[in-house]
Length: 159
Image 1 (cartoon, rainbow, N blue to C red):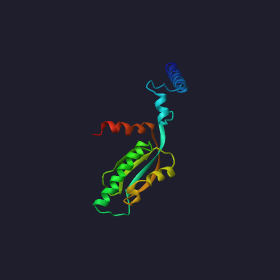
Image 2 (image 1 turned 45 degrees about the horizontal axis):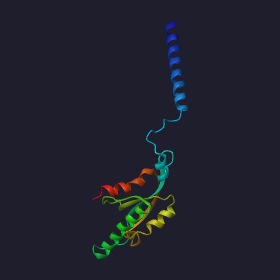
Image 3 (image 1 turned 180 degrees about the vertical axis):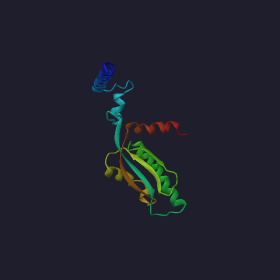
Image 4 (image 1 turned 90 degrees about the vertical axis):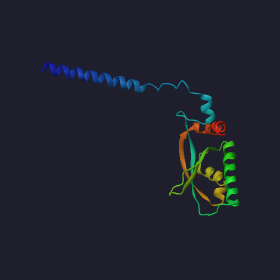
């Protein structure tokens, strides 16, 4: 019996020590990131987690049915020009198409704005939306502030 009581005491003492050690470690701030670049974080609008707010726009098939031909080509030419303009202005973090599927999802924009109204104003400049070929759906998104670096990197890798 003395052995069991002693064993219980040792186990309890070990557990209390481990809990105290964990509590003390939890009281410490997390270690600093040695790669942290305060100037870059500020330039990108990052919070302490390296994140920021954006608006995600899902582009879905719209009501217009414009057949292949000159008019449709001009609309898409304008669409791509608009994407480049918005990216150059720092308003568009990322854009791209989805594979064709039954859901009607065609593509997406991630706008570097925090309000849906601002995103609506930007989306309204796009010829595929103006024409009715696509309709936008808006969602708030909390994501890495590093998305703002994608356009600059893309310029260096696209031939």
